[in-house]
Amino acid sequence: MIFVTVGTLPFDRLIRKIDEIAPNIDKEFIMQIGKSSYRPINTKYFQFTKNFSEIDYLIRSSELVIAHGGIGSIIKILENKKPSIVVPRNKRYDKVIDDHQLEIIDFLSSQKKIIKITDLNKIYDTIENIRIGDLNIFADNSLILYLKNIIENMDAKNDQD
Image 1 (cartoon, rainbow, N blue to C red):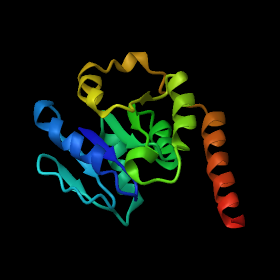
Image 2 (cartoon, one colour):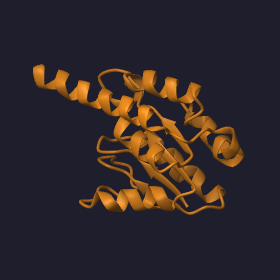
Image 3 (cartoon, one colour):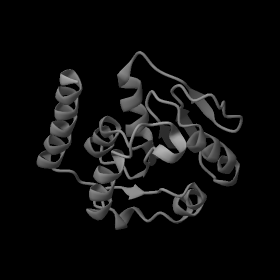
């Protein structure tokens, strides 16, 4: 099973692209679509869950996770040692205020912790040709703490604004 998660904000272009390619991939897809307005027709989906253990279960049960670039989602993926494709939201397309996700995703991609996709036209080939052995999905505690500190610093900055 391939689990797709986009967090809370809409990410219609990712949801639509996965729904478009899903019939051509011999895997079950389950998508958490958040506030996306697009409703998949080729995959199972849900918007939100009140029980975060359900997300943990879906991540643990998946053979691949496709996620937005939110640090919280990335931490969960790394903690569960799951191979992942991460698609950052892009200011140009996704109605976000900046491209802050790119810096962290670039770093994690350079460490071979994740596969970064910025061109959704490449996601089908990436899924079909992914070689798990090419990834170093083990995340030690120092990396997890580093990412959690980024979240705390972002929260503290937002509290000051």
